[in-house]
Amino acid sequence: MPVNGLPPYDTNNIFARILRGEIPCKKVLETEYALAFHDIAPQAPTHILIIPKGAYVSASDFNTQASPEEMAGLWRAVAEVAKPLEATGYRIICNMGVDAGQEVPHFHVHVLGGRPLGVMVAKPA
Picture (cartoon, rainbow, N blue to C red):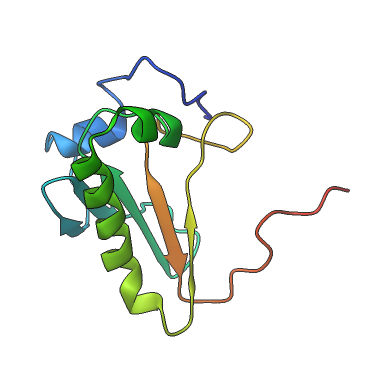
């Protein structure tokens, strides 16, 4: 179910629970500032989520509230996760709010690849 992507932060969202170790994940990378793991409902052969370890609900929240170290740490994790896909290409997606289809109220980045991904957004009818 889409969420609005606005504060307050829900400490019981699934990504917060994964960060606390209450729910397992198929981990790809963990750093001081970020955790990357496979999406449980992949939309491409490679579909990895990268989340900051801090409590941020959206890119806007993260970009205005996170420290420079947290920002650099998250985007370095995204780059490391995406690196194996550079030869053929990849897509990075961050959804915010209902219209974008954000489902978890914790900022996260999707890295998708491993096949041609088609158009970025369906054209209006």
